[in-house]
Length: 251
Image (cartoon, rainbow, N blue to C red; front, side):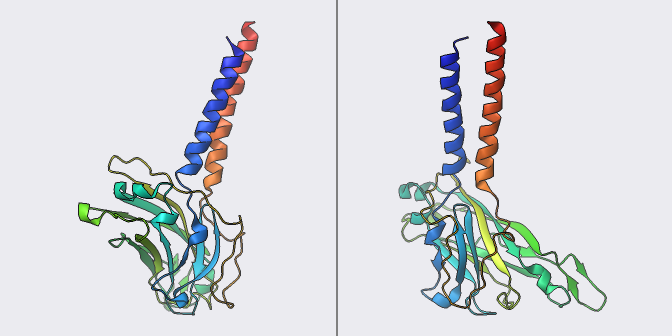
C-alpha cells in the first residue's frame, strides 16, 4: 500500500467532512435583531455560530427575533432555491412556572412569505388545583414548506425570518429565554443549502435593553453543531488509524 497516497486521501476526507458539517448549518446569527422596526420587540441575549438566544425587551410584550436571508445564506442567489426549512426552539428557565396555572407556551415563525407550522410547550404535570409542574428546559422543532412557486423568496435582502413567542406570558419576570438553533434550508431535491460563517465573537451578547436578563451559557441547550464536526472527523481518523496499522502489518 502506498502510505503517502493513503495519508493524503485521509486528509482530504477529513477536510471534506469538516467543510460539509460546518458550512451548511452555520449562519451569521450576530446579525439577528428586532422586528417591526421596533427595538421593543426583542432583547437579544447572545448569539453564536449555532443560533440566537433572546427574550422580551418588555415583560409580557412582543418577543420577535429577526434575521434576513442575506445574513444566512452563503450565496444570496440561493434564496430562489429554498423550498423548505427547519430549526429547533429551546426554552430555558421554565421551572420558574411551576406552581402557576400557566399551561402553555409556544409560537412560530414568519418565514419570509408565510407562517411556519408553529410549536407549543406544555407542563409535565397539571395538579388537581390547576397548578403546573414544568421541566426547566424544553426543546421542540418548527418548520415551513413553500407549496407555491410564488412563495419562494426572490430577494435575500428583503426575505426576513422572524422567530416569535406568541404566548404573551412575562418571560422576563420568570427569567425565561428562547434559543433558535440548528437552522437548515433545503432545495426541491432535499439538498441542504449552504449558509454563511458566523462573524461575531464566540460569546457575543447584543442586548437591546439595559434590563435584559444575563445569558447563562450553562443553561443554554442549543444543538452543538460543532460536535457533529468533531465526531465526523474522529470517525474518519479512526478509519485512518486502522488503515495505517493494516498497511504496516503487510510490510
